[in-house]
Length: 585
Image (cartoon, rainbow, N blue to C red):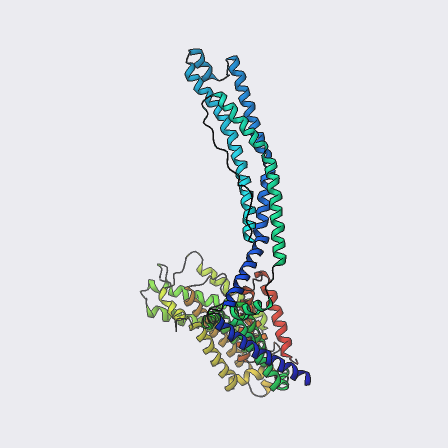
């Protein structure tokens, strides 16, 4: 007891300190000289870090490239000199082994022949000059890399820059010979120049390392930057600590009892913990608290909207599992209902109703009505199979899952359905600048299902059947009718989810639509505290379970977790949530 109070008071005190510090930090953003100095020093240290991690490796690589190619220019110049010597020997013999030149000499056109001969000399000089220029470019690049390192750490380069060799105008073979000899002397110096450049680059790298080792930001500057740049995060952290401290101090024992006794309470706490983690994952680097809250709210609405379809299906799955059943066909049923709706709404030449002249609002109403009826039909077939046919729910829904999707794919193969754009208003109409309708549908269905489960005779019969089916029969409850009603309700909810999804996306891919929804819905139901053995669970717990699964998936994206590990995290969160619920099954 004493330790709890001490820890609670420490959390409260630290929370208050952080809230005050964050508030002070927000006022310092305006123009504190100390803050500007701290930021300048931080930027300088960051530049030194960049120099060490990026600029230094680049400079060393450039120096290594210059050294490894130092002999290339010398080889090229020597090759050019040999070619010129060969031309000189041919000049002495008067035979160049060149058909054009030999013919010109034989014809007495010596002036024209000399021009051709001079061109041969110049070609060798140009090749040598290009090799020299290439190596000079490497040396210049190496020196530039070293200068970049020194500049990044606040020093200046004292090396004489490399100047590229100027081209010589060749007007006679003698001049070409002298120019190539000059290039040979220049190329001979490259290796030593490259060695010096590499040593200079290594010295610059060591200087950068020395500067980095001396870099340090004073503690006061770190605190100042933290409370100023991350003032929103500091205040948020303080508020979290303050709330935790107050709860632990004022109602710690009651909190522990509620944690053990009420699964929905532990689920709600787990959800709040995930929300806090998500807030930190989103970050706090915003100019104002309003910008931060707007960003957080937009992300939260995206999570709710993307999980609204699974959320709807999870509501029906809750009642199915409470009765002791299971429905593995919800994903395929969604695809089947979507197929019915899309085929009837199709405004392309293949459209069923369009071909009969039914367009506009009557078309949409008929398509939506047919979709709901088809969902009810699938639910009825499952319910009849599970009750009158005495087929285990797992088997009947597994069979229906394959049948419905296969039939849907069969009827949509070979042509593309064109859903009218106007239907998007059902799901995408904006309220206050946000597309909230899918969320509203989900919450409205949740409210209806809550009333059914808690305040109707049908709801009480669902719990009774799940708790003890034999006793329920003896008590006069029509068990088959209850189960049939639950599966029909499941079919209706899946139909609503399918219609909303078709409207939101203007169609779905029948082959993949709803894939995995059954497992996500079951996971949300279990995380929400519903017992797989039946007889226990709640709609409100399922809503919390959907939120937990949705936020967890969002966190995986924010934290950059590999997508292939998503299912592993889903399994872990299910196990952890069930353990936290402390069920006594």
